[in-house]
Image (tube, one colour):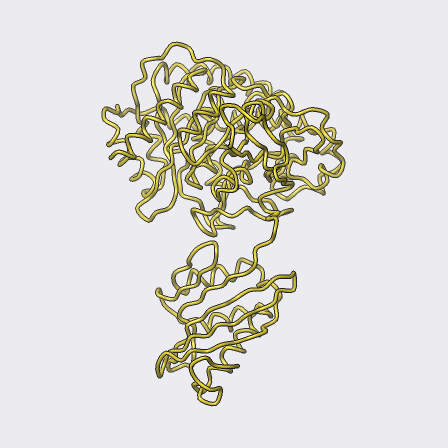
Length: 510
């Protein structure tokens, strides 16, 4: 160890030994030793490009869930002694995968010995983050030189066909067997014709059958605005690419919430369009009764400009009273509920009334039955003999779908028609307001079936109704992303986009 402020012989006793003990423990993933060498308490800090972890408990949980640090070799160490009990250590490392890194640690001498009170880690990022992207180009497909979206860039969810490329659907086995697409999906082609460039094909949860954004084959895309929390799915790759600023438009799909959930959890504007409002030619189906085209952006204006390209002409403007569903709001956690309450109070006249939360569980079960039956019908020919290639959650859903009673499915399909008409009747020509998600993005491993059920209870309202829904991004008091969802009658997509743009402008001018 060498020192920039003092000669090696003058370094504080025990510091060198503590540093190398930490390094050995890091390479061995010795969690107990690492915990002991980081200062206890709520003020200890660890930071990297994903954000800052605050407190020993958060840092320990992060280390315990990552599966070990990247292999590396320390090639240079520098020390600056601050005072009798504090020293700054900077180490340069070479990564086994290539590239270099730097770790900076503030060590403090306490009764139990030297401990780290703050640390920052920086490494050379990979040229391609395969958690987010399957294929990228510069660009992958060039749009027209002129058009409404000239200069914009698109991440395309890996369920849309792009001529000459395969559709992978988040499954390595499916990708390996897929032929290159002969033509580009119509929604993608419209964006290209409007001047947007396709940057690449973004990751999706397998067969787009998830809400959390995790993919055990490729890794979970990061959530830039809620560091180390899950991104939301199944349009997770498109959402993360947009949130990171790698593209301006994230093209995805929404069957049961796969636009609204990642948009809410990553602080994006997002729209699930009315069923059949945007052509689904060249789109790998999951459940055609509910599948819709959707997209996400970082601002409401661009969200609407994409709508000008993809959506049919709007019907005459409707009278659109805003109605906050008080019983649906009650399903949200207190921090999300407070954010929705606060923003809707600032929107002027917002009526408050119950929507019918007591019926949501039955509606959700009907949605799940029909969705599962359709997913099996769409993919049984390929999936049935390849279940072992799928990740556990998706495999379990397909296995459950294969066991469904046809009579039960038929009854659910019949019931769905009545539920759809009832939902549309209750909304009428108004705009329904509800939480886009009941919570902020959870940490990996904590998103359970109860959260999935509550999510689907909220998101299936628009799914069953075939309705347009727009996420308006909000923040909780702690600064974490959440959202309020605007839902309207079928075909009122442009009305919602115009309303979202108006709300964004009013918020900017507040």
